[in-house]
Length: 239
Image 1 (tube, helix red, strand yellow):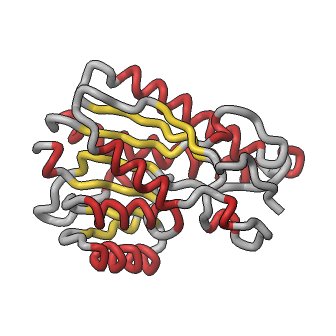
Image 2 (tube, helix red, strand yellow; image 1 turned 180 degrees about the vertical axis):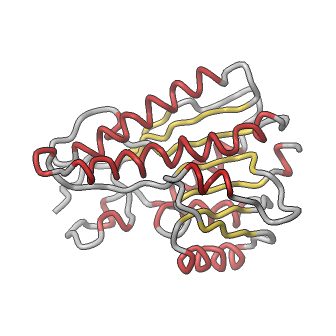
Image 3 (cartoon, rainbow, N blue to C red; image 1 turned 90 degrees about the horizontal axis):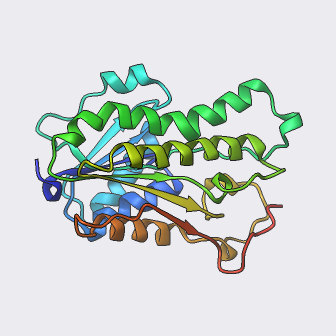
């Protein structure tokens, strides 16, 4: 299959940044969309918004991507194009000091922020290699680049995701599969629900979405390996 006719798979598409990424691809491209998350009701809402934005082909994939078993059993709708673009957006933010973080909470951060991406890539890499071109975009974090005393488990998990992404880029550098890491700063999303965060000071999720669409439209001889996005005025106090 050609890259131009392939679909886009977006994880964590049920809300927030993932929903914005989905809508931007719907509005700006003709690509079929595969929306993956655990919440079926919210995924259907995203699918409706994508159709309103202009998408002609949208499929909902209800799946727990932390489970490699569930992903290996996952089947695309009959006749639906395989993904040529994968956006690993699924993630979870834990605002908690390391000394107060339980092993279960730490493991949950690793599972959601690292292994969702690892599992999705493992599931679809064989089909990506059969295409004339492909792109993997992993949503990392500025917390992938430095430690944070108020969210250590999250930072550790995002460090791991960036290390995985950089290694994947090196492993696939002789193939036609591009790999991009986006180190994302504080972005308006459900992660800040219940806080006093001023959304006008945060990165707008549509800016992130538009950037990913632009990266996907680069010529095949170019790839954005790694890029960081921050709020214009720097870190915003969480609470």
